[in-house]
Image (tube, rainbow, N blue to C red; front, side, top):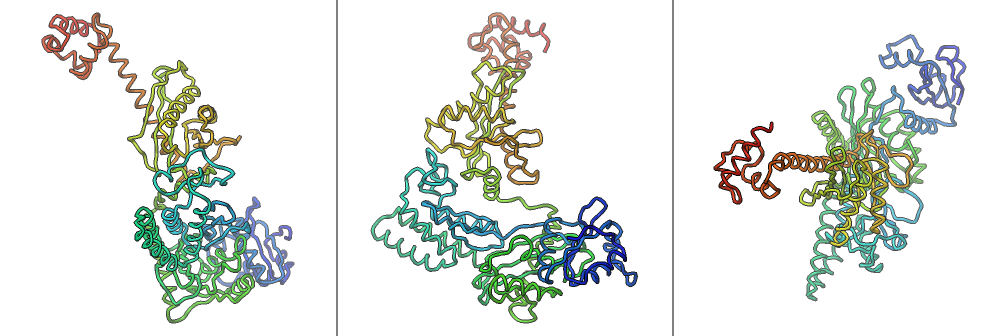
Length: 615
């Protein structure tokens, strides 16, 4: 890349008349704009031309530019690819920006493992696994995959079986989602058979597998193996659901991507439909900003460049045979040549003029308009599904198991007195209030929150081990590294060191994890952090509520307990009858005397004492 030169006629006159990329930089060296050109000298000189009427955006760009850098390449195609990657790297404020910068998701099946896993990923590697996709909508693909995993019994955990395994099955086993091969309750051969049935479904051959499952179901029913027949019936229903999720719209065969654009002032939305084997398998939308002065062709060009040219190239076999666009742009033949070279076959990039393909583009445009209207009416991102949040949390914390069961601990005390702890349980992202627990800390630890936390975790899991039920997948503690260490010591003492533990500190909302010297900062807008905060805040509320209850009870009992002859049982009788000390004050001696174990004389003495004692 050439060193920075001033953006003036002398500097521009020395530029080569060759294809390349140019970068406008501000006074602080920041990249303001990235562009590509067939001839660098001619293109950059057009920014300084005095004729015509450049837009406000262009005039402001030239005004803020301090230096210009250029990079010469061998062809226009190389310039186009380099421009896309530099825009992605620098995100210049004067370029059209795409908000949602994601690669298409794939379903990965680790067939090279003894007990294969199936999960959604955005990275395709040559690691011996089978990849299915790409799919436009990750949320839709997750729902379909979870449906298949639930009915087929594919494990959701990430243990490297059989080398790495838990001591007991997780919640998925207890609710019938998995047969627990992790602890030897399902043989490898049986698990493999299930995976072999899943692979063709992911390839799109649902009908053949449906026929096989229906045949096996009838065979099991005839043999009066009704439990297996019921399971196969559920599998068949899952396959029907997966087929419905796939067959949104059947078109005239072939593999193609269809792009639609909708605009409203400075904001636009691009909708991409992905069709494979004649089936519309999903759609994805993303917002585009900074396009108020741009033509439709520029917005389309930026969307196509973002999808196919920025980042690592898509493998040739993943590319469609045809890309349909709503409008043409000058570099369309260049893009077509680049994609054809990568695929090793012809990839058509075209703007249809008539027939069914025009209607497909109209469908994509309708999707874009709908998304634009929703975005304007909503003003915010829609709330993600609980299942998606759990998967996000698993990824961000690097957990082996999807955290369907989360327990959170907090400690509360009043200057060392009335030390209590809470344990709140969330299942699938929702609170299970019937399974909340609180406890008084037995140890005389005073203000030592760490030892109190260690006792609370130990007592809670000590009972859980005796109950032999499903254990939580994630232990969350309110606090920092000290509380995290206390919880880990307690779990290790019980022999449950395999359970994932994390701490969430209120200061900067930092997550502390075992084995990490630095705290983890999850973006404040992330749904995973919102779930952790919700669980942590609920544990704090529950602990403080119990602490206040004990503190209030101590205050009330001390007021009555100072009366001569009124012991704990009589105090309880007075509070049960009159509700509070104030209620006792307002009673008569005769009303108190009617209580078992009291007399009118005792009532007179109690009232006389309370009268001289201030409230």
